[in-house]
Image: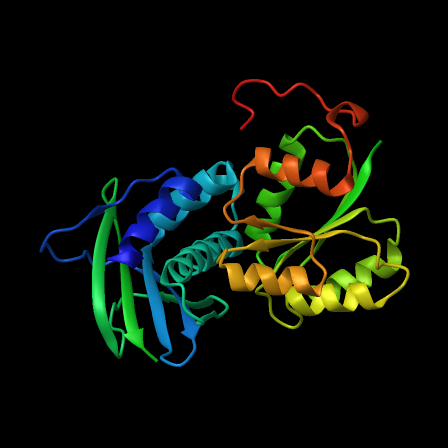
Length: 138
Length: 141
């Protein structure tokens, strides 16, 4: 699927991380950072991402080129929003329609992966850490 | 020749990286100014009319990149400043709209130092040996 492919590419390019698709195993119970971005247009939809905190820190270290202890929590949040922004933008680029990219929204951390209205879910793993990509109508 | 660049992006992480990447080009930067949206950018330009180049994201709250381009091009004192848009989407229609508003080039996110260097040199009409460019060492990128 286009969205998964774009996610893999952006992770490789921006974070030097290379995801794999997960099998049927359940996702662990951790605190997830939830970030979403709306795609606006005639058929609007929302992309929602869940990142485990450990994964968020690795992403931040790799993207910023700084040690974990030097990276503040607000900066981690910013990195996640930027990741979603770039994935959303690159996803839109492949669609070649007139949809508009919204601005990424950080929803905080949650132990729940419930997302109302979700139609498609992809669970991915990178070096033992998990994250989830969801697609759903707004 | 050292130049003044204004970078506009609502993401602090992206601004951090833009700064790193711009310095990695080896081009001598006199001042690197940063703003979180179009409105902040205009306030900074009021204080820094000597700005040589503006790099701006498009999707930002309060005042987006297109609105910023239009506002800059409307002021005689700023009209000459070249503006480059930073795009996550890269679609032709988006870039064309930015160019029609007055941008001179675009850079796709995530971008690389060599692209930034090429855009800066081309946009400012500067040959590589006219700027103080340090030799880039291995592993600088």
